[in-house]
Image 1 (tube, rainbow, N blue to C red):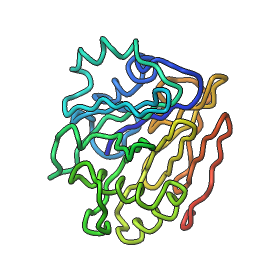
Image 2: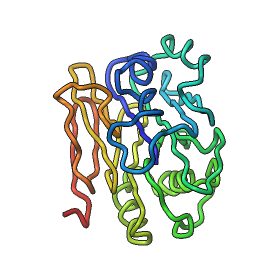
Image 3: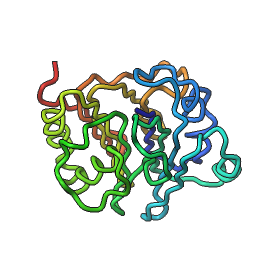
Image 4: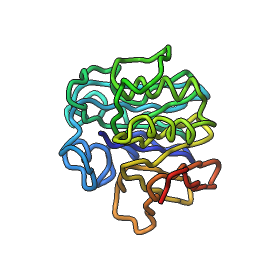
Amino acid sequence: MCRHLGWLGDRRSIASLVLEPPSGLLVQSYAPRRQKHGLMNADGWGVGFFDEGAVRRWRSASPLWGDASFASVAPALSSNCVVAAVRSASVGMPIEPSASAPFTDGQWLLSHNGVVDRAVLPPTSGAESTVDSALLAALIFERGLDALGDTVIEVAAADPNARLNILAANGSQLRASTWGDTLSVLRRDDGVALASEPYDDNPDWQEVPDRHLVVVEDSRVELIPLKGSS
């Protein structure tokens, strides 16, 4: 239960992706337009990006709208590949920086928009938090992002109520899934954006159908139906 954003293309400032768009993650933290579950995303936020191949992250348990330090620094940070999220915590889940996406294994950045019963997730090592999203991220890292579709299908079979919108990046690729929540794609001359909901009113935003896998590499966008899609 969050909103997330991915970018792959030319270098852009973090502020231009997260803070400046008229309906970007900053606005989505308090007034999302298409969120199906929850009214706002005030339980933390995170931004991850690639800097000459290295993974950099900034995460917080506070609302994005109240972080003046991040707002002052974000215009000076830039990358060709970004994953960012604002969080609405599931009932009973801790609110702490380590519970905010993106999670990482040192090569990939990953965000989960949704919810899953932790009891159905097989034991894994390396989870950054006890929240469902962190445990799911650890499972996906262990299985590998090439198996993202199979992992989503397996977890959904074990928990039919799960919502499993995943967004991941490794510096040269974006990978995403739609399973129970929204995702849109924007193809621009300078790159590709994936977002839980459009961050502006550009008519070129296209909604990704539910139960699909998305692979973005260079400027190519591939949509792959997942088993069980209608």
